[in-house]
Image 1 (spheres, each protein chain N blue to C red):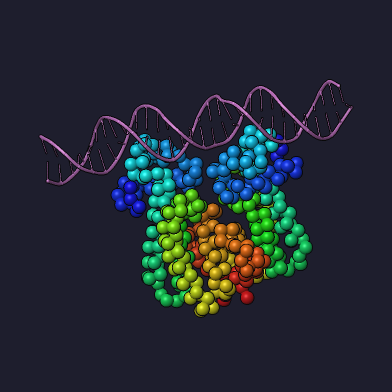
Image 2: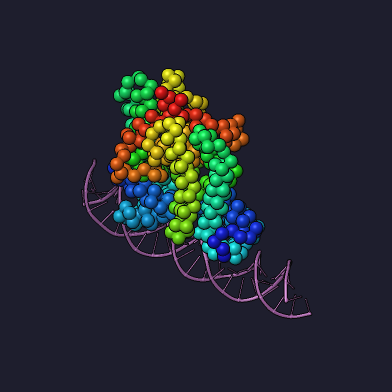
Length: 190
Length: 190
DNA sequence: CACTCACACTAGCGCTTGCTTGGTTATCCA
DNA sequence: TGGATAACCAAGCAAGCGCTAGTGTGAGTG
């Protein structure tokens, strides 16, 4: 009954749960469905997670940790040029969004199903992630790469990026990097 | 048991349902909760709607019809200048999004709960609405007001606009029109 | 060998769900 | 005045829900 996914088994179960949560939505996913997908009986599920809520928290935490790691790496291995950093951040966002799609869709659309304790805990991770964005956007604004109110600009950019999960088709001709570059080009003041 | 909201009573019930669906989500909203909010008993609810699904469809249809009406009016009462049209469209989108917020949040986030029949029917309304957008964006692209791929640009813009329901605070200092203007300014190529 | 412990099972409890039934009341037009 | 009709209610059914209790088992450890 851990807060974070220690065992390999639990990590795998979390991955399967994420898939079902995306497919059916958290509320419609029953513990019996989860158990079947995991190849066990519904009672056995509660050996790994203390309740259904904890499965949701595990899914979201897993996704957030990955996103944070990748975003930090992208920024570090990147020149200090504001445009390059903005592009790198957008690429990293979309990359995590689609390599780890299930977890992120759950994080975006099932957040409100978290109980207050888990929500408070995970909010810190989300804030840390958004802080990375704010800094990159601030730099871009200062360099006059883009224009506008820093609060609104960051919301619009994140909105446009997050909404991609609703329409983007990974099997289509466009790569996530294409999307990122196109978005940056669209908002840049030449 | 109508497809569209004919009676005044049903329209009012639909409005109340929309509010609850936003507050709790469709799945977590029970027919007993709905009935209580409407001031009737849960059984009586099925005199107005044949099942829970139909309530959802009524909510979404109501919101879509309103959005279409307002968007069409905005475009008509507007100069043919591409920038003015783009701005008008963004304003209309945000205006409906916040005057009729509940219905639109439901449409955006509970669409997948519709049964296939209702979904097919309502898809036509949604397509008609998006067609308005595509035309305005095409004009803006042709006038070189904005740059980029028409498909991606329209997705990004709608994404940024739709995502506002997740963070915008109507009691704050910014009006929906402020948001629309800021977004248009952000993506315009000066 | 005895012991622990992770993991799984069976069985089912207590409760909530969407929805139905059969009957009552208020309204309105012929 | 009478009869249709819309709107409502009390009661409850069948199914499904999250979760618990108690048990079995096979692998690793002293």
